[in-house]
Length: 195
Image (tube, rainbow, N blue to C red; front, top):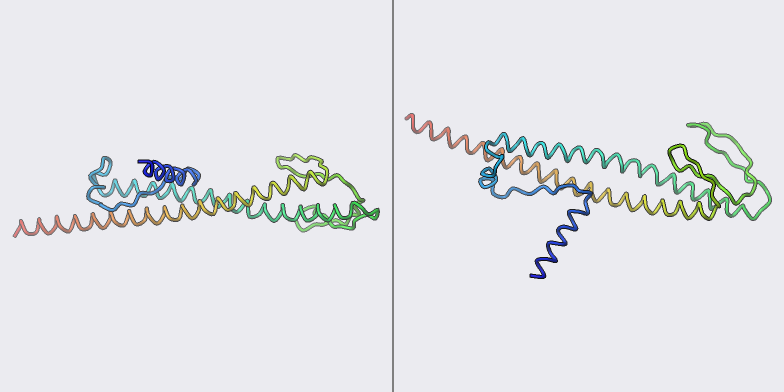
């Protein structure tokens, strides 16, 4: 009894793990599947499966966009961390740091930055805050680990979603083939009864 409960909890944890993506159930017995309510005809069953497939496609699009944003965000955070580490080394010296900074796409400006222990970080939504270099580094390291973890989770969810695509496509093919066989049997019976 306890093993059954533990097993069902593991299954529930797996289902919750994938951002609420519903699991596609493999149709082993097409005859019993077609007897379920809502599956009166093969067309209605195929329509339901296609609707489920389209929902999976929509989820894939959203997850792919999130993945792309994270893949762009991680190098930016890493680059900013490298700059902070460099500034921390230069903080002890009195000579200014010679650098180029981005004004616009492909437009850089040369600057001399005096040693400082403060930096300003863009947080998004047109918000910039001033931090000590150590605080900024801690914040960016936390953001980098969160973004990396989110990217791993997204990749797992996309893999899970691809499995759901495959299952749904196989289910659609099985229902379609079942309908083709059913129609050929009906045609054969009607041809025999006419003879």
